[in-house]
Length: 238
Image (cartoon, rainbow, N blue to C red; front, top):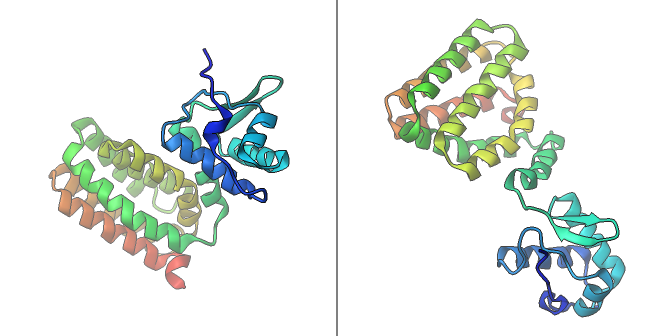
């Protein structure tokens, strides 16, 4: 059953409201739990009149929200909120990062903030099966020296396993979303002299700290690894 939503609940705007202001209002109502997943929004004409905005501005705002995965327009049936699934909502964020190849410095800043914390959590929560998989990743990395693509796959898998072991769904989604940009970075750095060998050594140190269930050591080993990579990356040259 569709929950009835009153147009008056969206508030009003000055007549020249920008579409992003309208979209921000809708998102605010979602975060305030006044709108819920699956809700059908009031008819466009009614909603625009209630908010005091033009239908063209409202339509543009709803189109932007649709691209973000927040709303969906059903032909002949109106505009609905999606299920607001976190994985789906993070996809546009990941796409932006994949396209922003010039933001590698910002990428490393984000990784330095997030990944040591994930490693510390993983040291507290990692299980034996995941530790065995991490050891295999290190072995695969060592065996793939000189094969850039195979090395990158093992590298990405190791970092992904650590994120999973941390058991924090929000942080895991964030790190997954910047993974596309991480691929671009790895393709540039993994072929440079000495990078792969250093990475294998760094990964061994990280896994050893995880196996010792030592959160500070795991965080420090991860930070040291990221700093080593950044120094050799295009971001480190700027």
